[in-house]
Image 1 (cartoon, rainbow, N blue to C red):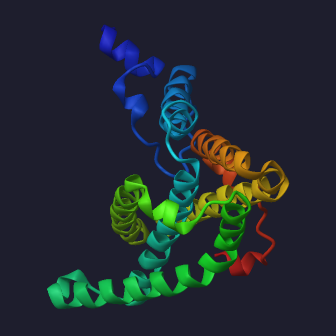
Image 2: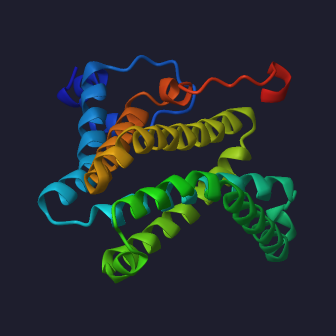
Length: 239
């Protein structure tokens, strides 16, 4: 057996970096788990390192975390709206545009509904930390970050549209994505109420750490993380 084949068998090759299919029952090798842990920690540590050592503004990063959560939720809502529009790409560009408009409208409406209850604690925390909106607007990284987040939200919506077209497996995958987004932000809200207001301006640093830790956890154990908040709906309502 060649070295490449042995590496694939042991989970040491580049295949370990590829996403696992939803619902896959294939065992995760220790090497693959290590790869994913290193990637997750490194990716989510960027914001923490930037705030603690590179002079990044913690208030701006907290606002971008909130924007990233809303963008992820919009992507899910928009994909569901596209599916409900019954748009058929085989009917031409007009049908696709009609479905896209419906998806955008549904996504924006539902995000506006959830943005208020999810965002009020952030506004209160910024006020308690003596952070003004003028200060946030003066930070050039805010506009850049929002632009990148908007682009990733659009890409996510397209991916979810294709996932929902696959049937039950795709439905389960998109539901898990939404559960992860909601669970992660709930943990951030818990951190805000228990640490943010108590620590004052330093509470913003605690929120950055909490978001990074929750993100790492959600990437390493997505199924378990998505089930932290149990679904108490009847079984018929879940399908």
